[in-house]
Image (cartoon, rainbow, N blue to C red; front, side):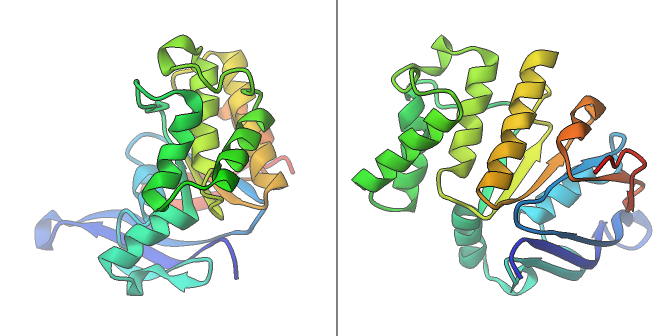
Length: 229
């Protein structure tokens, strides 16, 4: 199947008496076109969960499937290719390159993947246009508002046409209006482009945009009463 699937996943840090159980028996499926939120207090395991989703950490036990591939069976080179081509990351900070304009922020990702084609440039421009940035293509990060920088980061996450989108506190540095704008855009792009999307957040105002909401505490994941869909 496409999307993300966790089957009885555990993550343990340390050994013997110093063991810390970061994730405990997590089972979850996020399908293409589905936008899921994970909420919970600091230290609950959300960051570990998202890192395993993004193939940045390996589970200690259980099975993690990304687009039907068992991530635990991949070697480091295969994991790097998976992260580059199949996963788009949206972080707390936009993390834009200061000396690249908006269009080049996207094209540098394509360049890492290989040669940049005219079709790549057209797709990047179309993506930026869909996010309301058509008149900002030649602007540099310092010339953008916080919301515009985060929208550029969203476009960058989608530019390789990944099937999975992972957002880590994407509204942390935004005011309320911009936060709603950014999460609404993530939801819209994930649904319209058929991406399996997961957002880790403390901002419960943003849950209205999600199809499902899960609560994490002490490494355990449960359905949340915040579900509205």
